[in-house]
Image 1 (cartoon, rainbow, N blue to C red):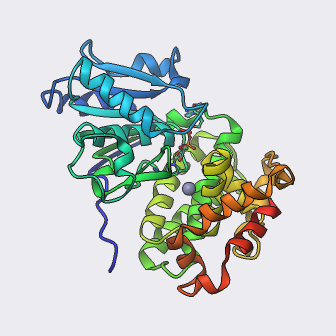
Image 2: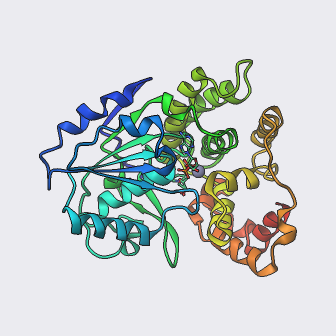
Length: 359
Ligand code: NAD
Ligand code: ZN
């Protein structure tokens, strides 16, 4: 079976395009209970962007701190219940922030129409009804969350996305001006998520001309941004990074991620390490699997003088390592893509534990 993927319905791209958000949402203002729900990264509270949010007096603007932890099922259920109780069902949900905020916007839009707790829907195609109209406005680029069909949530039992075609945003607003304030380390780690998406998408059995075309272009952009003569956090590179993130996301959608993301999921689930940072920690040691990519990655780390801690595993217990290896092992689609259909003959919990001990 080939993938049959629903894309974003509308995309606006360009410097200053955030100013069009008001007109875009005005078309929806008569839907449902006639108010908008904005979920906004708390970083923007009191900043210039707060004043530019096109909210009206009936709307709810909810600032959310994403610093402490990644989105949880409990957080989504509470947000849905609170908004429903106070005003009903919004006309649209608008997420203004990074992967965390965009996942919150996607998830809560689905939970306004699907009953019970979001824990019931963690997995593929478990959602029963389309969500309400939802718009993504990224303010940090790299995860591809703006284009993906999943909203990753950490629940009491699993870290797993609400994944279905209704998760995909109806509209995205890509305004590169919004990412200029991202701190340098995050700019690097989150941008590297795109780079790693492409390397993993390309190196595996599911790669095809379609996924390859997106990866090739996204990698070219990443090389300009992180390696070229004009590399660094400039306006021109921010323009490129926003597009690279989108294309990297599309590449993996039509192919798959691999060993690095499997290890990264283990780190996030057991130790709470954040996605993009966890990827960088793991990728640095995956020369056996992605030789050229890892060499290039190390050049980028050196060029931008990024701190990437080493010897982390010395502080991990054997039980923690085994628990991480089990999480990683239980992502068969990633191993199948990276290693091949006979991956179980080559990859074991022990061999994955060995990879964790390298970190
Ligand atoms: P994030 O949303 O977690 O934000 C990272 C940090 O950057 C936060 O401290 C945030 O406040 C700050 N920040 C964001 N925009 C800023 C700006 N313009 N200026 C200054 N600071 C800013 O970052 P992320 O890396 O984009 O997202 C990670 C999350 O995305 C994880 O929860 C992960 O599970 C999820 N994820 C989702 C997908 C998907 O397909 N849905 C894919 C990969 C990762
Ligand atoms: Zn990723």
